[in-house]
Image (cartoon, rainbow, N blue to C red):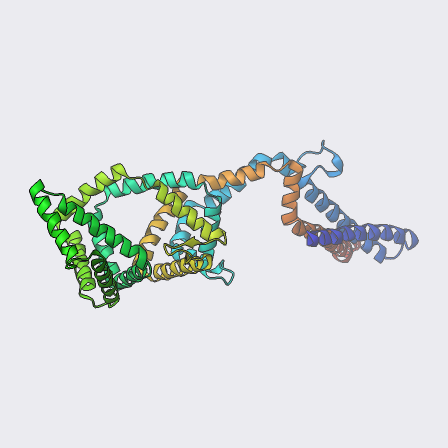
Amino acid sequence: MAAMKQMKRKANLSLLFVVLLFMGSVTAILMFPEAWWPRFLLYTAEAGLVGALADLFAVTALFRHPLGWKWIPHTAIIPNNRDKLVNGVVDMVEQQLLSKDMLKQKVREVRLVDRAISWVEDKSDERMIFEQGRDVLSKILADVDLTKMSGKLDIQIRETLLKMNVSPYAGKGLKWVLDEGSLQAWISRIVEYAVAHTPEIETKRWIRDMLEDSIYRETHRGNKMSNLIKKTGLWIAEATDSFNIDDAVEALYGRLQDFLLELRNPHHELRLLIEEMLYELAENLEHRTDVYATINDWKVRALERISFLPSVQALLESLRQLLTDDNRLESFVQGQPLVQRQEMKLWMGQFIQKYWDQFKADHHLLDWLEQHLQTFVQKVIETEHALIGHIVRETLEDYTDAKLAAFIESKVGEDLQRIRINGAFIGGMIGAGIYGFLHGIYQPLLDSASRFLG
């Protein structure tokens, strides 16, 4: 815009120059009627003035009526031909600049998945991708209606599980857990929890209650004579101290403590047996059809009775709390935090970063995704291409006549002002050439012919 204004100022100065030159040449003719150069200047100024005024009129007539004179034909060309101009621009953009074939070809030349990955990583602003994903998830959980979302997830989980044969997946999942070596770690945690939560007094009371209940049931089962014999035998054993319930409680409690301490050994036979049985279960879940049927039957009956809604809602609430608040979840060990907010964020970040890297390295998945993206984009171009022309048309039709003229003038105005300068310059050159031809060639020839004929 500034360049156009500067060029317009130069064009106006060129017009002013030829006007002053014209006035000066007329004055010079009056003062020096016998001299040749005033007439030369007059020829030059006249032609330059005509060229400058003609181009000024032509340039102005493109956008408005010169001097506001609407009676002059073929002026305000752009406003008067608004519809033709809009249709022409729409056709040019839709059929030539951004045609269907051209857009499809350009899209085929671009690998969309790579562009998308580069765009995501370029937009990271030197932050890790997982931090952005975590922030997005935090904002979503902070704003979403968890009750409504939990209901939808509950329905989706039920429908998915009903359609899915869960047995092979359960087997693979169990085998993955076993192969990762986390089973023994979990067993160790359970053992340590049991060791820490078997206080002597409460545990001994529980053992005593269990023994007394067992004795009572044994001495009251059967006929009266049998029960009398059992009670008599128990009384004799207690009287002779061959059976002492306190000693039995101490013995069982001590054996329980020894057993728990033995279970701390990862190679304990019971722990190895549990792992072996779980591997066998995983194998059966994956490959045995009778297990398939049993698991699926159990799955259907379980889904009819249970609801995931409370668990899903509680999980989402806890996740939102961890990501948005400074609170923390308490573990089953009283007073010991299961996970804190920063730990949860770090875990989520590592999780997202890990799978983002795996996604970028999976060329088969990227090729599959690229194929589907290309198909989708090509289909969008085919079905929605007319939207381009519609947008261009709506944009241009929103312009008033004055705004449309000003818009076009802002794009080509600098060149149009150059035309005005060229009109004055070329006109002056032509005027000088005409003077030279008339007085340097034509007039001498005419004088020679007159003398020859006379």
